[in-house]
Length: 260
Image (tube, rainbow, N blue to C red; front, side, top):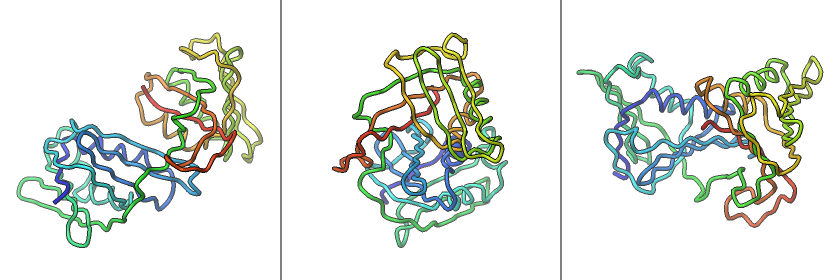
């Protein structure tokens, strides 16, 4: 058996899966390495990605090395919730085991509470050797600003509440951060965070930068954390879509939003 892991904190795994729900009927790539488990979801038309990294410390037993597969995200979440959400609460000592591969390359999800054991075997798919990377780590950073978490969350939620399907994020070293929602039933919505305000903790004076993230996904990135944590907004230049891909997207820019 290539993978045998006992999840010490299953509620954190559930939160990670919830944050990765960026599209309907998503399949999540699960990559096991010696020290970390990577959960990765690609959105429609490969325009959005979401990734969670779970360190080995979250597992009380961990035996895995260089294994990856894809499993249906909602089905995996439902298997973890088979015994009810209370079974996975932080104060409950339920035993949760992930094992792979079972027969026909299936993933075993086993929940044990006392004398009761619940098992689910989930179908998996093979995955590509490289994950889609929209962060363009090899490209230069056009600008970066660190914001107060609750302020960033409230600003993005304003765009979501206005039902704006499109957004523009502008980082300017002089004026600050501008978020503009477009295409909603109530017209355009603009939120301005002044550079001199306490909401902006730091900024790179690298010049004007603009990107077009998806408002609901940006909202997920901010809402999942504690309200007083910090949010990093970074705009990068263009680059290849998949790591190692020879295609070049020229001036295409992407926005990274994450908690620190």
